[in-house]
Length: 203
Ligand code: GRF
Image (cartoon, rainbow, N blue to C red; front, side):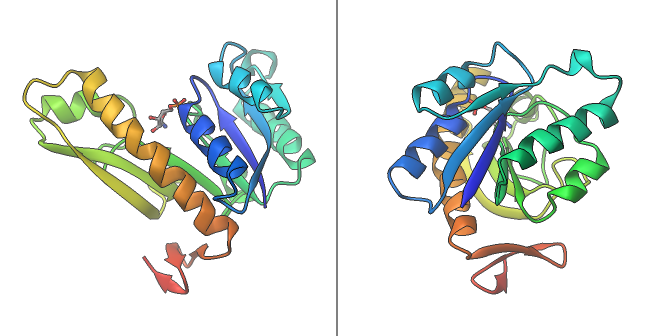
């Protein structure tokens, strides 16, 4: 299966996905990496893996609608079976989400439905949580609200910094994201009636 990955930054999840694909663990291949930021380190990771990249800075577009239309056209040139958001820090228009309905995944650094939105690690620490984690989900119109596919839990210890928690969470993302992608690429995972289904059963 053909995978297009969208990034905005470091791309550690992108790297985990590229590596898993290279090792034949997913049944998929990353055919393009697209960033909204020219400075995203993930672009370099893609170059090193010989994957075509594209940078699309929002500044040159009139509004979100115009940007998303253009982004869609660029993505579709690569004829993806799956679109993977890996630290892509933009709100997506309804038209964009609709266009990739059932074939777009995101990873969000919290145990959804807890802590949608930004700054999840800080908020979890401030609320005195002893447990936190990350979720892979299908993308729907509701921000960080699509059906959850796979979650990983991590502990929060009393003296943890935000960076400690983030590192623990990201380590888990690098396992659960490639695994979810493998489920999708091997035909085991679908979005159906607003739920995520694995092996013909709702999760
Ligand atoms: C990840 O922690 C992910 O949960 C969030 O953004 C971060 C991206 O990190 N959506 P990276 O660019 O994959 O290293």
